[in-house]
Length: 433
Image (cartoon, rainbow, N blue to C red; front, side, top):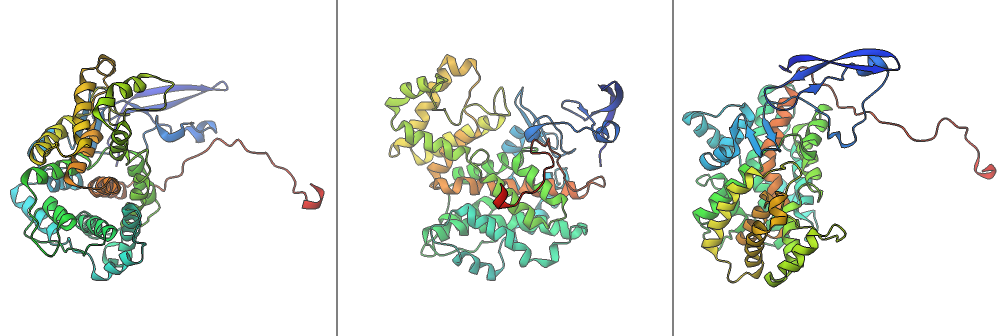
């Protein structure tokens, strides 16, 4: 699939032998050295633990420049998409690499909305879990089991089946996620409604009850949709790379997305906004903020200020500015006076943004800080934070999977290793050791 341009060659000398390696250039971002023929030419591999200096694929979906704070999908900035678009429109953009016209968008929204129910027998899967099962454990199990219920969309070689599977995953994930929450709190499941938007449906299925109508406020619906947009895709992170690697084996799309959910569950990946709330709990009261800020500046102190700075964005997280406005709107509507934790969060934001130590190091509040505050204010327990991340990221995962499957150069992933174990030795029976 690669349309990368050749931008010269890199010369590598190994044991007196010189080899020429092509330098490839994309439309944006750093150039890369093509090492695919390195082994055949030198008998050596490259060594790059965690692949942080290796481009594992080419992609036309998402572009990030962490040095200046850029995130774009299909060329559109995340600020424009979050401000002008909707989550389903962003889903379409990721799947098809172009924004739809009005009629196409309406058809796509109809398709997703009218496929949001899950197979009725899948209700039985939930009762197989312990009542106190973590919602992410439920998500992994139920999504993985979708291949047992939707046999007509598991042939990865059929473009139409790939598209149907993509639509089903995006459409049904809110229902699966909401039911995981309902099961954990012992409340009855609510079915989706076709007259509600994507985010409205999810909120109603999560917080509604049969006894009365649930009508979320526009501010909360808007914040939910923005959270989904801002988490839809983020290039080749750990979970996305997992989905691609699983997909390279020919596994069905439901199994691949379940693998992505399992990877996202790791606290180093999908648990950042939950870590923000845990940090606020640790601080306890706004009067304790100065003490904890001093601890955060001490390299010998294990305390870390969660939700500030970002591994990828060295300047600022472009998603954070978008979500701050939503956080302000939600907190204004719901109030923080009766929630000391939210009041503490707002005070921490204010003080940290004025502290020269954090300002000089560009340790600004990131998307996880604001999403954690919003989700707490809406009423989600921290166990659901990563579930919401998985719901949103499904759009990116399935688009990345689809792009990989449609790449004619795609082969099964097979990383190499630097072996450091024993060389050949002879077996000795236990009585002679």
